Image (cartoon, rainbow, N blue to C red; front, side):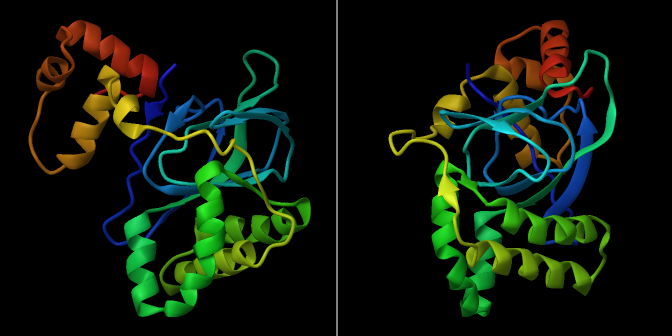
Length: 226
């Protein structure tokens, strides 16, 4: 099954996106995105999927996924359970970090962990215990304080010991193949034409579906209405 594209909306006045969500939530599905993602589980246990890797998670699970690497965390909770906070997420683009490294060459120390992340990087509980509280502060931080905390996260991850990769060396995500799904085409179009007018009918035509069929499919896959 092809993963769904998640559109990561980083604010115009921000360098990265730091947020948290409960369970269930619209992004809790097999999905991918071009951005790096740091994912920290705060509550629940269950199974997680990164590329062709399947593992068990518990609170403190800390993963860095690289660009376009499909992933998902599925909590083992009774049907109908709703949790206000399940995990915290930090997302940033390759372009942002590449540009930042030109200004701050010290950031080249992140090269090793970023390369590992292309197969998914699992950090030890000790590293998670350091990074978790920083992510909690980062979600609420404003202004220059966000940059300070972001750098603290990168420093902790790039210097961490005992980190291991998850997906096999033979697993190579293919975003061009993933984009063959109709909803992914629509999401990609939305992401690149946010400032331009378009209608649900335009998106339906792009995916080769009727407006009503597209609307139902879009809501089912994304949990959003246009």
